[in-house]
Length: 307
Ligand code: A3P
Image (tube, rainbow, N blue to C red; front, side):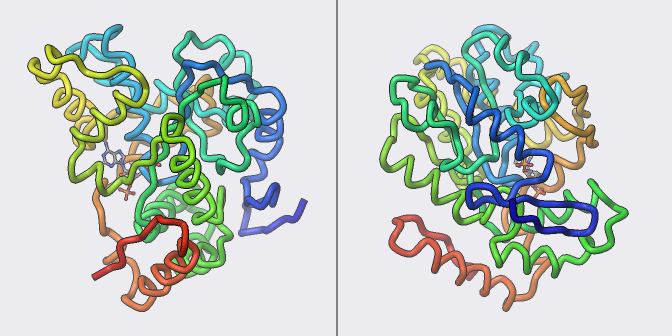
């Protein structure tokens, strides 16, 4: 497989996607052996696009009948300890853990849609649902840069924002090109709206309650009128808010498929839209926007250009 080396890290190209070296075998195993159940919900995203938040929201929505919100696991446990990461689980030999999860299972992936197992994308009888979240790529890039700095502070090159920026513009960052990751799920959501829900991080920030209602309807757990009157939607919004979750440290024992234990600040940094302003010049922002606009052309998906 083609290899790219960035400092200590090696990326491999497999099925037109760049993967961390540790993920490729896991992805192949998932493609061969993962069997979706009709009740499964896959949370898909490009890294740093709101995965942690989505894990919390979907877990809270789907488990609200099991765990009362006033005594919910998310009051004590980081979302990463509540929802399994599929390729991490396969990479760490925890395939059996995934198999043993009771239904309905919630699992997260960063795999592009085109690389999901045929059992998920082709076999419509599996009925497995996918919730995808995407985010302004400029903020994804900034968030990724901060994440890498925490992950591998010893690697000088990743402290150079400009290097990561260039890789991103070339489509060379992990699980990417970013635009292919986003477009694959967008197209799937247009073709199969009952199977793929496509949400934008910035819209969720603006109106989280509407996103919660949309997710609940999509995954087949709509709120009853009684629940709405009792303020359950708002309670879920609060339970999963940045402020409430940010201090929950991660256990990340490995059972949920995490390869490394990272501090909570790796997943909760600022949680806002537009932080790119403090990290790149106007020209750099315009260049990303034009690249993405070109890639999105004709797809029906639009990126809001920086004003
Ligand atoms: P920033 O680095 O811009 O702050 P992921 O979960 O996919 O790794 O994405 C991490 C990003 O989502 C980080 O962005 C993080 O702060 C933000 N985030 C995490 N939890 C959030 C929440 N409850 N609400 C809004 N943003 C959140």
